Length: 261
Image (cartoon, rainbow, N blue to C red; front, side):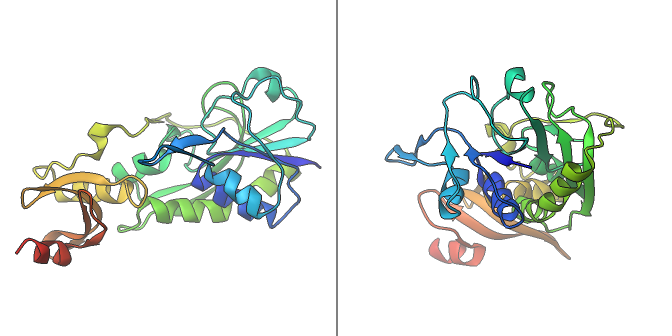
């Protein structure tokens, strides 16, 4: 069976590496290079960089349309664009989604699960359909979310589990409708990043770890704007562990407070 991968971001790149260790990948379909950073220089998406390291051919159309796929199956993960019906008809499309569908359909399933205080999540491999994350499930695996796990830890666990689930779905090709209450994981917006110190400490801790290590929660400490990267709930309540002052590097809270003296 000829298989291609459609991916863009870091999670997609990590899954690509795991999949490529198991089977040949014909090519990677990814998004175009985009301006990035203060200099706004063109930068390749993480999945393209991974494909280059693995010596896998890359396709980068501006839009995923009008293509001839030439494969039996396409594994889509962390791509960031809708796939038109004309492409869905050419091959079996499997979508790797880091949640227990139908809970947390949408753009930010890991972050929203942690923000909500969910004690478990998982990986669902579904047959891709035109409706957002609504396809039938071919394989699924739950796993716990620890009280101090951040989004990075959850994504890493999901990336490790995903390839075996893809193999199961490809082998069986039996898909069951999603069952249960549908919830949606809206894209993270500016308001989601703000820490309001009047909120319950558990909610603040959940928000901090949901946005780490890739986005960052915004707050004010000792009158200075910072990003808060790590925290924990100790015997005396919420403890801030790692911050990043505006324009500075990441540091421990102790280092930050020492610099204020």
